[in-house]
Length: 238
Image (cartoon, rainbow, N blue to C red; front, side):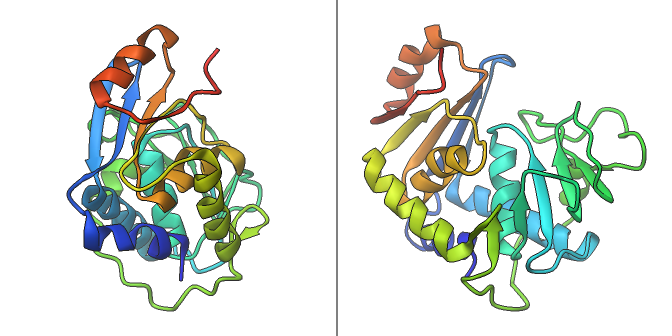
């Protein structure tokens, strides 16, 4: 089974309405909260869009060149759901996801607006790139894999599905993250360490991520108090 099926799908059966990720962007002054069910909905839309519009098949490389963000979570989980091999180089990727100011060398480029409310780009992207958030809204809300994803399928750089799931569970234990925890994090989702600590370990534990992007250190105490967080992952703050 894919990473998404192993780590996210079980939460839909037990705690689908509880928050999964609360995303702050201190530079934009925004706060967005997504439940487990809403996160799974974005992931399903992404998986369907990748399969139906980009012809992504299990093992195909998908470059995700995005910051830690609630939209990045949906894209990553959607890519893994359909068996894509997430990479950090776009040279041979079937598609690359970039932010509004990003560029990519892949055959297909999807520009992600990173708008707090999930809106698409205000102006069409240049050079034939796709406006991902506008396009993906038309994709299906449920995803059913056509084929099972073997555990030895590459999932993130040189690591397989089974390796990433095992590492996520192990890392959650090392970081002291357990079910019901609320994790205040400023970790950038660089691969593989940042993704393991900031996204996959809390997901594997069944915890709630309070992710702060462009973190203002002076506001972290208020974030901790307002969100009633129980675990800190703040080693990226200077």
